Image (tube, rainbow, N blue to C red; front, side, top):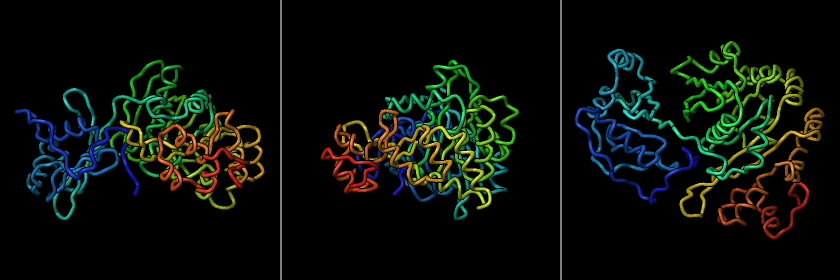
Length: 388
């Protein structure tokens, strides 16, 4: 089961949690629930008729120990924070995206919608503090090396809820602390709000600041960016824009749904018709700088609910030649045996996490691309490409 939300609070594995916040007279009642989401470090708050409020904490839905909400109560909570125009839009269209700020500036991305002829609300907590590589237990040498890339494309891959957005945020803030750049992000939704340091940001949210990804990327080159972050590269037009931006001297970050480095190439090429795939592959040959593939697994160290397992490919002359010659399958061997360049495959990453006491061996073996290769690695045997 895919888990959502970033690394954070690890509650007891129970189905309910007590509401820890008292209502403040004169403030909308929904703010009490948003405050609870903040206190529990929940990624999301859900309100629906017939159920108590639900928080998603460390990827798990946790029901607050309060009476179930009636349809009338949910409607009152939602309309208590809408403008008259927003209320009319919701009634007319059946859904509404909007941002909501608590008095102290904390931000939530809200989606109100109709379901089974009642109203419901999903609120995503926007993080105000960007974690560091160390905070996230990411491989610092590799992340630092990738962050110093001047131009080209860097891809983050993984399933939904694998921490891709958090890793990109850590990279962007690392750059923010060290260089003077204009960084433009297009996100759905905004996951982290950046504070300008040496660099300055413009963050655009799909559905709030722009109609969709395509409209945003068409406008990007008129906004004078140095670094561009486009959420998910889900279609040919978005990916081709990334290639074009990289060719013109920009550094581009994007995400893909893929489980490993080799699969990333297949996912990219499958976006395009067969007669264009060689052209796109050559675009990758010239412009791709790194691929980071990530999974989140339960951690056995106290206070760390989940730990990222990261496969890292950083372009070098050998990998560049393999891409040019369409020998993509051979890249995994290079990744597995280039640790001195900051690279690692999933087997190597899992082995390190077990040996350093972050992962239970059973969990690592279940997540490994090859359980037998991981067993051998844990015994001190590692051969080229992880193949026995």
